[in-house]
Image (cartoon, rainbow, N blue to C red; front, side, top):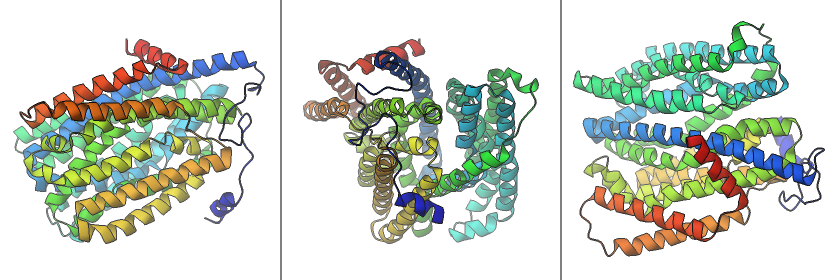
Length: 535
């Protein structure tokens, strides 16, 4: 922490090609050794590359999160709000444990595979892959055994005896999911995003949902739903390993060269940050489970699962943006990075704004999908929705910091956010229940995102905002006002009909306003690349 403190006390020089006014790049600035025209073409090329990766990832992420969301709805409908709360708590414990077992090697492995692949060092690529997969599996096995034998004690902490068997089952799946989270990311180092989509976003949720239905039919309700998630993780891991071999056929032909010291030195701060970050993200569920009954936990979990859908844009663009950051920063092409950051941030904002507009107009209708007993949480849904949207709208500030070598700063950020989240939850949940949990999580999340934004400017003079944000903001405002007015004239038949009408009206008015305001040049590049990729 002392080293982290020293890093805060001094600002690095502005990155080459950026200005002190927030990263604006003057036309006369030379990017590397190329001419301004050549650099424009290179930026256009990078934008296409990001858009292609974002296109396939967005579709896959949309499908994967959609399937997971459907699974949550099905489980909630089948189990009821109370058992759904126990299911949510079991998966929260599982996710915290497997994140610790991952040891930050998802980002570490991705970074070094990307760098060594770019330099043609196949031996080190192989060594990085082997280390990145073996460490999480071994550590996950140890954590899983500990969790299995301490299941009774953990259940007593939450005063929920029926949680014991759930914990025993999830403990067995920790090594498989921890390794899957690394294996699915590794192909991104080869600039191939589709394999993550196939294994994590398509295969895993489909198998999970199919097994949930099968186990319920066989009479295994809560434990069957938990087991489905674990089995799907194991099968997804096998598929990811197959994809790695397919993308790196030299694996059996080259001799592994290990960079354990460098890889672990980079990954350990991320491991701590990842564990603290996951613990931070699940603090609301964990503390709700401690202070409140299972039915409130179930209601809040439905809200949390729905708000996750806002992260589509950020996840999609980060998928290919992350290795490009590592590459550009490593080769000192910071001016290109500055421009690419602005483009990605604008598109992240626009893609996040659309589902936000739909959700803000359909709070009760969306929660009614889980069941009528979930609708009581609409106020907490509103609070969490607004804070999440504001946070995600700041763009890929987290990935930019991490891939630029500021993983220790990110560790400090996450630790402070966790402390703030725990304090706020401790005081707000006993008084306000699920609304208090939403407030605590929202305030702490927005705080950490704003902190990352300021750090990005302080250390690198990078700034994601530009006038490109204006068109999206206008489109969102028009969509909300137009839809609200038209819906007031249409009778509300039922919640599904109302949700469908809202989605159609928001989509048409939002896209129509964007087109009326005219697309920027990079917008045409992005849309064309995504359209071609989808074909």
